[in-house]
Every structure is written in C-alpha cells, then in structure tokens.
Length: 199
Length: 199
DNA sequence: TGATAAACGGAGGATGCCTCCGTATAAATA
DNA sequence: TATTTATACGGAGGCATCCTCCGTTTATCA
Image 1 (spheres, rainbow over the protein chains, first blue to last red):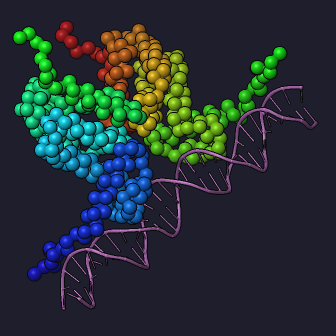
Image 2: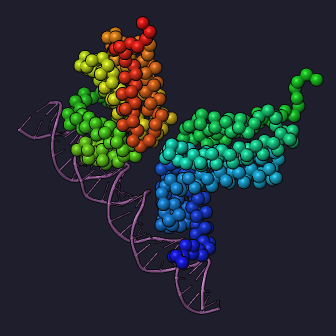
Image 3: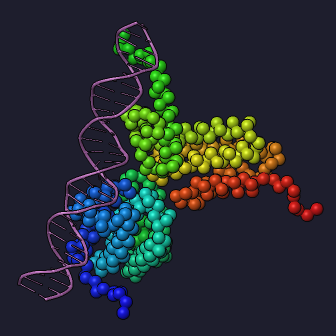
C-alpha cells in the first residue's frame, strides 16, 4: 500500500464560515462606497474580525474583489426569485434594478481599479452574464404576463439599457442619478392604464 | 486712495522654477514605470528634493498628474518640429511615435487610476488633441512630400490607429509590444521601393 | 550689504499593508 | 462528557506611504 492518499477531512469550522460571510458583506459595502482603493483594514473593522482573519480568507485584494462580485451576482439571482413572490410584478422589477445599481457600484470599483476584465477570469464574466439574463428574464415574464409591462422588451435589451444608464454618467455621485434613471425607465415600460389610441 | 491693490511682485525664485521642472521630469519617469499608484515620495527622491517641496508645488496627486500630462504633450509637439529638421522623414515619424508610447504610458496611469477623463478638465483633452493632430500632420506631410510614405493616411487616421495599438493590449508589459507594433506600422506605411504590380 | 519674502527639507503623526505567532475554540475521539 | 487536536482567531509589529508643519536657508530687492 502507498501513503494514505485521502485523509478524512474535518468539517469546516462554523466560525470560519460565519466570518467569511461577514467579510464579504462588509467588503461589499466598503467597496461600494469608497471605490477600489478602500482600506482592507476598514473592511476587517466593519466585519468585526481581525485583519489576520481577512488575509487568511482572502490572501490578495483581488481574491476579495472577485468573491464579492460572485457573491453579489448570486444574491441578485436569488433576490429575483424572492421578489417575484413577494411583490407586484412591476415593483419586483424596480426593486431588482435598484439592487443592480448597488452591484454595479462594486463592479465599477473592481473593473476600473484592478482591470479584472483585462486579466480576470472570463469564466467569471460568462457566469455572471448567464445568471443575470436568467434573473431579469423571469422578472420580465412575470410583469408581461400580468399585463403590466409592454411585451416587446427582451431580457438582453433590458440589461443593455441598464449598462447604458450605468456607464453613461460616471461621476462621483452617479448612484443617485442611476436610481432616478431606473425609475424613469421602469415607468416607461409600463402599459398605460388609460390607453389614448383610437377606439 | 484705498489699500494698495497691486503690489509689485517679486520675480519667482530661480530654485523654485528649477525644482518644479525636476519634479515634473521625475514624475514622468516614475509614473511611466510604476503606474498610477507610484509613490510620491519616490518622485521627490528621484527629483532630489524634499517631500515638502513636492507638495508645495503640487498640492494633490491629480495636480501632479495633470501637469505631467500637459508637459508631455508640449514636449511631443516641440519634438515633432525638432525631428523634422534632424532626421529623415520616415525616421522622424518613427521616433516621434516612440515618444508617444512613452507619453501614453503616463496617460494610462492617469486615466485608469484617477478618472482624469471623467471629471478632469475636458479643456485639457481638447488642448492635447489639437496639438497632437498638428504635430503628426507635419510629420506626415514631410514624409509624403519626400515620396517615402503613402499619401492616403490622414493625421487623424494615424492617431486613431495608434490609440488602437495602445489600448488593444493592456498588459503589464505593454510598452515593448507597443514599440514593436509601431515599427510594423511605420514599415507598412512606406512606399515600396520595388513595386511588384503587373507591368 | 542687509532685510525679508519665499522656498526648502525633512521630522513626525496618522494610516495602510501584510506577516507571524501565541491563544482560543470547534470538531473529532475516547 | 472529557480530552485531544486540527483549525481559526486576533492583533502586535515592521515597513511604506501620505501629508502637515515649522525651523532653517536663500534668492531677490533696496
């Protein structure tokens, strides 16, 4: 027999998992507010863990960024499903788009600060695109089926329009502007209650 | 009479002007090599002045970046004129393009690191575009008149092609690649000495 | 050749990065 | 449940950078 090839591993410790989650949450907020050069020590402070813990979970800044991004995409996907059952179709869409603004906030920091797009895994990009299209597709379908939104907008159209909104105005306080534009956009998608066409 | 509204100012001190120049020169090199997050203390060290002197001349990092950029554009413009009289037309163009690679090195750092394009003065952009087009126009004209380069390339075309070359490959060691591409590009512009067309 | 406005240098306090290691604790074992 | 042990934790510490502040130096002007 050779050396033991596969030790029975212990279950990961509960505190480790918890701290990882706390860190991701804190990082999402800090990066969203402060951009790409936010302090990692601030992230650790906000998460309520030591700086060593942060570095153990995410050895490099990029590791943390990528994890935050992936995490946010997953959250958005889940959020779409929750909103579909909890809200009216149009409000579900609107709230999901709001959440998107927050995601892009983090994404901007990552892309512009660290060229994640340049050398970053394109696997990550494909992954996020797929999940995003699926999520927005469900939201749209719901609202269209309920007769509240016009039916000639595809999921990809909507995502493209969003990207346009996001990248068009890249100021320091773009977030409130983006939220306002989302409102306008959603209202524009509505099917008018009192049609004005010829009878 | 009111209070004296306009005191006869002293002439600016010679060492001040000299140090400013030294700082710009050092900053150009440091930014070019190290990107946008290069250390300002390193700039001061390289210039051989105290850190306080750096901050007196350029209170913020952005101030220094913008000054370096403006300075480089001016230098490039002057360089074009010098090369026109010192070199053969084609070599003048090639060397000027080399110098461009170095400029873009600094520019990249500025744009990507600090969103100079986003909030930065668009006056600065207009200024640089105008001067650059003029410079490359003169270089082209000289070489075309000498019958060494094909005549169907405009100054703007050339600048656009350059931008393409520069932005296409955004790696860490893009500079050598860009220089090689410039070579290829200039060679491609040449009028062939022994035409191979049908007789 | 003073007088003085202006510029100089760099110490110093604050903050951030990342490593290292003694301590604490959750899972495995008895 | 009690003990063992693999694993994770926190944060001190060393180094780098940022930026300010102020005593000293020096170029201009009379």
